[in-house]
Image (cartoon, rainbow, N blue to C red; front, top):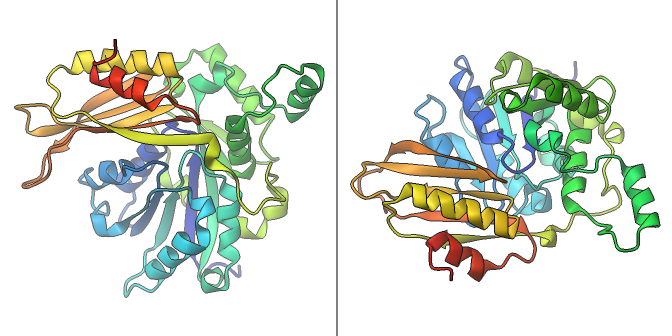
Length: 347
């Protein structure tokens, strides 16, 4: 009862490309008049997600209600960026009814939840719930070794094994901090496969955490925005790989952008992107394309081998009609080779 006077905040976490931004857009489209402020954190040097949401045309998605924290993981910049942002929201003459925080796909949620203990915001905001969004086809393909004991056994038995997998740690930390897990893109997998993922993930989450299949982030906002978890008071029950660390190391990941100029052959670009992803094990590509003669910009989003592209909105008057893609992957990306492949100049 003590937190009823506080503004609720929902933290949405999940691996790269799982569908967090799609979920946020769905929440905004179905907010029912509730005033929601969005805080978006992206890994990379080009803010794409904020622009996608600001272009959705839904009341509440106006740019003044969307705050972006680019160039760094929110869990590593709490004092410098997140806390001042929260204070600015709370000090508005007309503060929001609810705050939704979409973290970077590389973020650990627990350090962020800990930040709600800071005196400047503790008395005014509560973490209503942490939502983890998973990419069901990726989980079904076994891309993560989710059993820490099995990983340790492999480490001890095979000296040639790569003993560190940062993606595993990000993935498990996110679901272990969650109050609800959404198995997104459930329509891309058959029923037996979905049942297997439900069983696997159901055995990984904390007791009482619901695991729900979804398609394109379609989830009732009344369920997601009213959990009452007060997660900041429940940290001991949310285990993490990084309990003794002040922060975690993002040197395992890197990002860069590729400027393309106008692109007339979208099919050719798509083919080159698929090739680049396969050749260089790219995790994520996202950005906008200028198509000559078209009044609308073309959005490109790729997650592993899956790539979606579509016209999302008209170019604004005076807007720079540029084409730029952000590439995200594990440290050591061959930037020159990837750029050449995307541009079509590779030998």
